[in-house]
Amino acid sequence: NFIRVAYRDSNNGCTAKTLVVRPTETADVLCRLCAEKFKVQDSAAHGLFLVVNDSWQLLAGDSLPQHIKSELKGQDDSSGYYHFVYRPIDQERPPPRGNRRLLRDNAVDLGGDPVVEAPDRA
Image 1 (cartoon, rainbow, N blue to C red):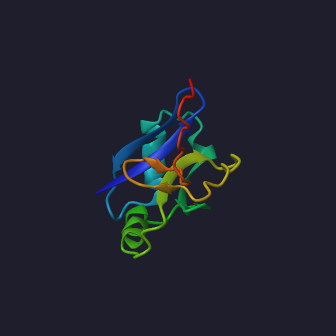
Image 2: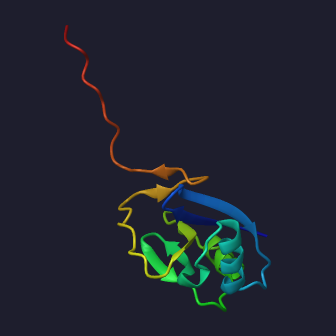
Image 3: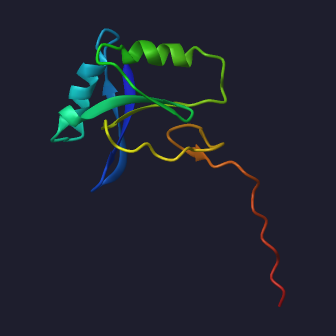
């Protein structure tokens, strides 16, 4: 039972770790694990967020991340994406992603039409 959690460190940039989380373990337990794995000093100021498309939600401490993940994976909406993000609770939310989608292994589809370069005129 694995959950991939993203974390943005001001020194090292954005990183993600795949963590072992049992179905009965709560968001509080996962937050403690994230604080340990990401080496966060002020863990009390951080929380676990669920990001679905462009909607951010701070998970309650007693929520069950594995259960949430199972529900999201069971939905038929293949156009959406979701992430678990460990970050400071009071941090400003990042800008919306627009029509970009998470494809696979954190690769992002930026959308739009491909750029066709004009031939050189020599």
